[in-house]
Length: 621
Image (spheres, helix red, strand yellow):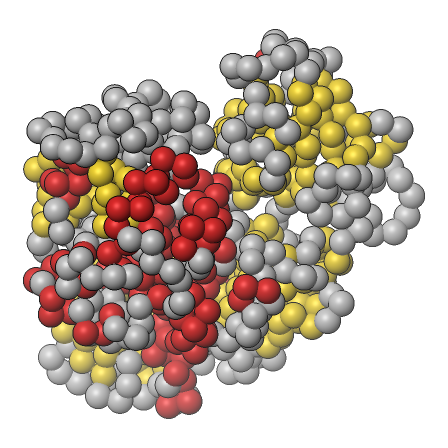
């Protein structure tokens, strides 16, 4: 009998939980008013537009006619479930660059990059409400140069529902997609997420009753998506304890199954795709690939860039590394001194403030190899001038970072003006030496630069491990996983916690024009999980040997691990960020191991044995 704690046996009868922005696609109008949008202040005028569109056939053309910011709200009230996390996003298109759009989600949140004109950009915010209804929408702010009237286009406010008030039908002018889910005997273990190409969670569901059927409809624009279904116990939804199944379908079948372990992830594209195309265009030939096969296909696509030389980096910086996202002052955007939430302590003027010599912070900016060049053998091309991993940074802070690995600092010996830190690694990281930690705003940026390096140079990176003591600490000597497990887990955590920004998208486009290749993990963040898994160093190994684990089971209940068909030699438990919380050797044969986890939640369990490694999710309740 499959045992469970009392909480795990509760049948929570509920449907999918998500807030719905009414008419977020702006396809439903009553005259010049978009249905569902109840607050349109007098300082703005809104009309339907069909010429500048992100998705569907129409968008909202917002004309800002005032400098009184409190008179520019564009809002509606939506129903939500208290305590449930929602991921909101909206696309905006600036025409002149003298008005900023600010996302409103039960309060004023993040701004758009107003200097980025003539293209669509996305603003996102994740929020857990404490009430059953909240206001969502936008407010518009004039900046220097505003002439009294300026147009901003708005589209695809997510999560969205049909417009209403406009007759029958589904209200979906894009592709209507349906999820059909049948749960097994333990429905409460099942959850799922549907993510965009930028890893924004658009829809999610959990809290299901056992042996029940559910159906949910979504309206998806052309683009790339990833559907992930989870089982908290690690035995899927079929076929050991019931006959659960799922099908995600629209114009075709995008994902289906039921017999999996802890999770199953499927990437798919609707229409012509987006962000460079998942399987078409620049990334032709990648459709349906995963694991290291996908990594090799990406290597073949990006390996032939044209090295411009180390000196040419200055020219690239002066044109493409300017602050159009924070202070918007046109100074050099330095990831080691930029303060996203306030005024920078100092700024660098392009060209004139190039290093040179330095003695303190603020003296000059130079060229920071985020992946230190000593790790690949010195000033060797094309690595030495590959701008995908070389950022403009304060020369002094760059010098303090030296060639130390990136990491999470436990005790800082030096902290820069924006909070970047140098010091001893935090306990539990998996590495005990000196590390350098950038601020949270840019952790995803450097993580994706590392995933790029692992892919672009997979033909040679396996030989770099012995180039220095620090490369030896970070690299594992292979050309597939590339990184030691501690570094891989941390990079995945940074990648997930700091999603791709508009700054990164713009930079990727500029690098493509400059040297002729792209960073695939900026265009398709979901490919990190497709190649390396979602945080466990055994994530791919476990799937590769699943056929050998049919009779190998691990159950967790009553604060105890129970083993069937496996003799563990070591157990490792990681939290969802990838940090090790328990690492315990098993010295004798046993079928049970007491295990008290730090707090309630989902953890990654790794089991080493003489048979084969296992990796699965466990839940502390």
